[in-house]
Image (tube, helix red, strand yellow):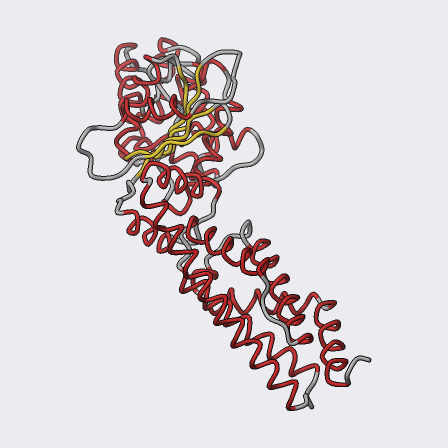
Length: 392
């Protein structure tokens, strides 16, 4: 026969497990009180909710049964710790999140059983202290072991770091800096995220060796900041110093590859940079790719705008494409660009502006020099046309 105290605990357990607001309260408290978790993006919150729901069910079960964490629980805790070590979330923050969750659990039980018997209250306290002590020891040990493994294999550790950046699994620049420090590396800032693929109809999954070979061709020996390479399907993804973007076109051209280099996003937005570059390669027309040139932030944003899912405001896209042409002192170049696009040729544009044709061509060369976009190239002319059209 079930004893009266255990029956009372079971009633509270069933009520709390069935109420989704309890898990929501735990997640909200962790999000508010632990800075690392406050910076998590929406893609990571489902994982936090799932762990909170599991922890709630297990701790309440232990309270009802006067039980202890089982080997399967310990394996799961070690797995969580290993994952946090891999994504750079400090173990101190993880353990604090569990303490915050335990406080919310206690408050929720008190709200549902204000006249909790002393034996039940003592059982709850004993269970929480024992569970927190056990999970702290298990998670700290597993975290340290994973951290050491990652640091021992530096290339693999850097590849995992880049994989996590691409997936958006880093909570903040601070957490990223902590992880970089543990690996003894300095990430490039500013950086270039290059997504590249061989030209051709057949596009099997890329071998990591091919991505690594491309990385070696782009990295300058003796550079103090670290570079890294990984693969996504048929494409290589490289994290490089920002200056490498200038070399990318020649290197890719020599290998009959094409690519998109994003240089304008911060380190905590590598996932955004990857999405922009990958989408640009998916949607860019064939004539957008020219030997010796890679697509840039401006190309990627124009393509996103044309696809109906802009990653930046139109005025920002215009500034990316036009660059210095937006300065008031370059008004004569904007007039030359507008006339050339509208008229269709340099001679016709010169007549519109009452200029000598050579003067108009000189202005077109200045536009090319200032924007790295040749108005005579069909794709680049289109991007310039879109930019000057949407410019406020």
